[in-house]
Amino acid sequence: MKRYALLTFAILMMPCLASAQDTPDVEIGTNFGVSIVTADGSTITQFGIPGQGVLGQPIIYTTFFAGSVMLEPQIAFNLTTSGGSTFTTLGIGGQAGYLFSGSTTDSPYVVTALGFQLIANGSTSTDFGLGGKVGYRVLIGEGVGFRVEGGYRRWLDNQLNEITIGFGIGAIIH
Image (cartoon, rainbow, N blue to C red):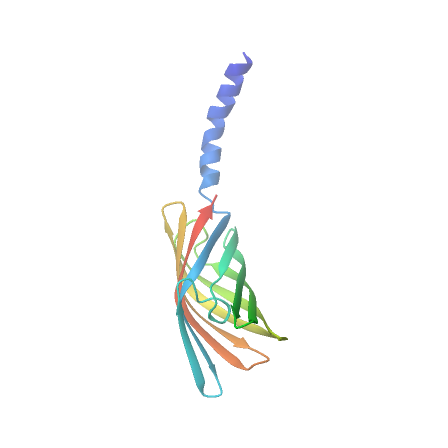
């Protein structure tokens, strides 16, 4: 008798489990595209796959969804050693945004974007950036999120302007 009750319970729970799988909880991915950094009349343009992260560095992002709200920590790390010298950069970013049509369907979005950059090469320097992005997120099946976005971030200490145009692609976990 317990088997039948358990089987009945499992069959009745399947629609609940199926509907729960429709809501993305997390998206893990990376960006690629162009980063244009300007300061004092000079311009550096970088294209990267992956790229378009904190000051053009390759990044990994993890987006957490709560309805139409998205929260996204980002990290970038580079270590270069040449001729006995080591050059290290660490970029930490974060975005908080709003998906106008929610996380379960294709949607335009806006985000505020924060960034922190640490550079170490014998001495250490840091900078903090603040900006925003607009974009459009497309769901490919139930397991992939694809983004097209453009953004601007102002780096405060070094007086840099960062403009980004690119794409993001991530795996969706339900």
